[in-house]
Figure 1 (cartoon, rainbow, N blue to C red):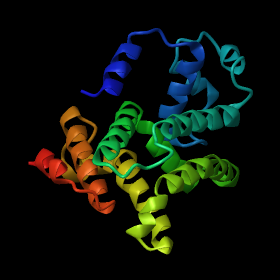
Figure 2: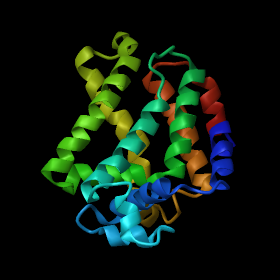
Figure 3: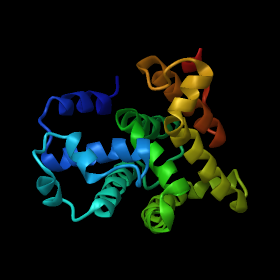
Figure 4: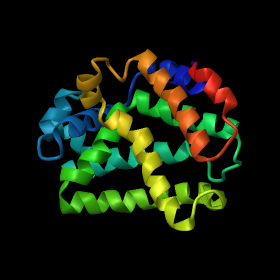
Amino acid sequence: MTVQAQAAIADADEPRSSRDQILDAGERLFAERGYAGVSMRDIVADTDLRNQASLYHHFRNKRDLYEAVLNRGLAQIASRLAERRSGTLEEVDTNVDRLVDYLAEHPHIAQLIQRTALDGGRQLQRALNVMLRPLYSQGRRAMASLERIWEPEEVPHLAAGLYLLIFGYFANAQLLKTVVGEDPLGPEAVERQRRFLKAAIARLFSIDASPAKERLT
């Protein structure tokens, strides 16, 4: 178990603030039902709040809450990515561990990003685009040295592929469960995905991945 995963277990024992409860409920419900399918009453029912007035103390309206949920998730993801890439296998492993730990703890955020892009409506899609640009720019800076391996025009496609490789697994967990017949979010399945990502990304980055190959056997 990684340090991040151990910290998450410790945090789970701490009482959640009202604001965190609201954001957690919004993350799950918006991911499962979409923006139009969730009411503020639904959010309150999924928390320890006594009434909707307590919710409006933290968020002006449903869109404000929705954007806060997205902002929190994307900020957490950005904080787990290295600004500069050293090109070592250790850095790949560290970044993968940080992202997988967070997405395993918050599997709905990947689904929420995907749902917003598909059916969030124009205003929410524009908001998502604005939020994603800094994260995309950060990822491009981290991959700047890869232009010695990939052609410059290929790097944006590589970035998109890495996003789908990492986030697509969690965003489509229900589909994978139906096809594979196993819960992809179970501990053993997540660990297999973690090992696969480390090996795959090392190969894409042309890093000597012999240790990663050994982990897969």
